[in-house]
Amino acid sequence: MGGKPKTMLIGEDGLRHDGRKPDEMRPIKMQVGVLANASGSAIVEYGRTRVLAAVYGPREPHQRFMVLPDRAILRVRYHMAPFSTSERKSPAPSRREIELSKVIREALEDVVLLSEYPRTAIDVYLEVLQADGGTRVAGVTAASLALADAGVPMKALVAGVAVGKVGGILVLDVDELEDSKGEADMPVAAAPDIGLVTMFQLNGVLSEDELERGLSMALTAIENIVSMEKEALKRKFEAIGEEV
Image (cartoon, rainbow, N blue to C red; front, side, top):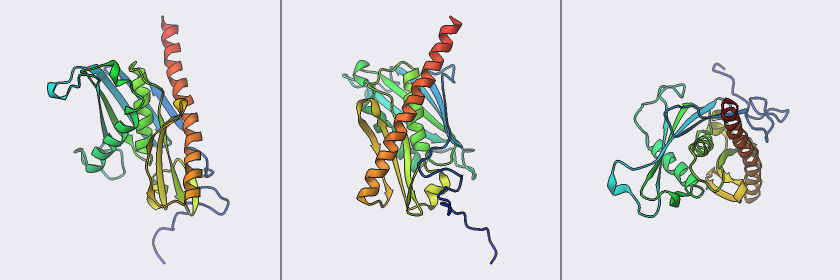
């Protein structure tokens, strides 16, 4: 019959549609200090997903009624650029973007030392430049890097990754096709240096055993991503040292 052939998410050779093994990440790239006018900034790529993060502050909020006497407020805005997907997206914030702004803020609040800056605001802007799955977890990673680049004190760096279930098999770092066609999607963020999981969500159904194995896959990957964050920060400071 006519129509496009159905894409096999897991081939007979056990490889995914893009050639990765089930426990294999997409290529990750990250760089800090990419914006001159922000207090801190970073760009993070998980495969074809690209997220830009900019941090401003700590600074006095424009609305005085928002200040807290004992700590800073952390504000996060997650936004998908109109050109980030194959179909042009409205520039107006969607309900999903508002929800993910809150999810990412909560994933960061446990590690940012907000008590160091009472009566101030720290603003984190996340712009998804290209979306191919995993934008919220790439956003958490980018935000953590940008906060560190801004010199905001944190207990530890945070990173995220999503584990999915495709064709009955657990897979690491799901892309858009696997997310939309798979049976489950589990975004996780953590600060491995202090043993803290800061975000845990599950869309779909996993058995208890799959949940435990999926979480273990995610945490192992997050340790590697945090190591990459440290290297990205080190590269910037080494470059500054050479200039001096």
